[in-house]
Length: 210
Image 1 (cartoon, rainbow, N blue to C red):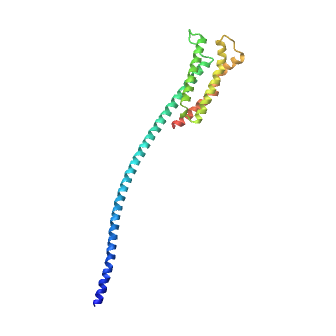
Image 2 (cartoon, one colour; image 1 turned 90 degrees about the vertical axis):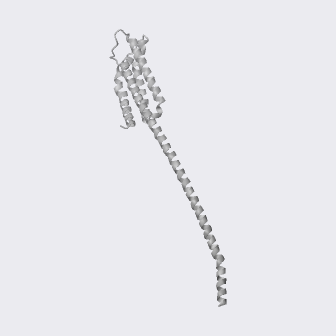
Image 3 (cartoon, rainbow, N blue to C red; image 1 turned 45 degrees about the vertical axis):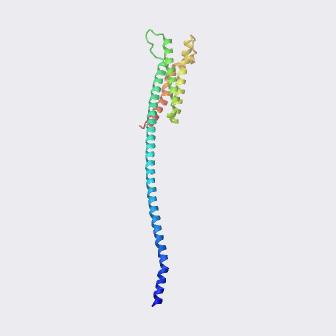
């Protein structure tokens, strides 16, 4: 009996350190886990704040970009409207100048009147050219090509008439070929310029979203 008791006591004594070790390990694990969970919650909280701040910055950037796009679109619409207004004015002045049946106001010298019309067209042409070059960034490649064609056709038509008038203004007599070119210059507008003007109008409408 004593032997059995001694064996039990020895067994218990040998288990106590192991149990204590296990208890301490679990205690440490629990403490570490609690500390880790706490740190994890702090990290999650900080991360959530960072995400919220990032989202706020992102929304702010989107708002700024939308604002820039809106202002850019408004500017482009303004440029298109101004350009088309310049085109119509320029073409109208060209028609007045090269019209062979133009009416000369009473009391005004025909040469003086012609020179006024010529100068008005040149001034309008230069304004249109300058405005177009200054705002070329707002035009597509197709419109840029059309505008170039418009300038070339206008200049060609103007020259056909102006060569004859320039000689008359100097007191010289134009050759018959020059007179003939001047007479048909006005008729060239529907053939050379109007088709380009219509294509420009179509392109402008497409850009405006019509």
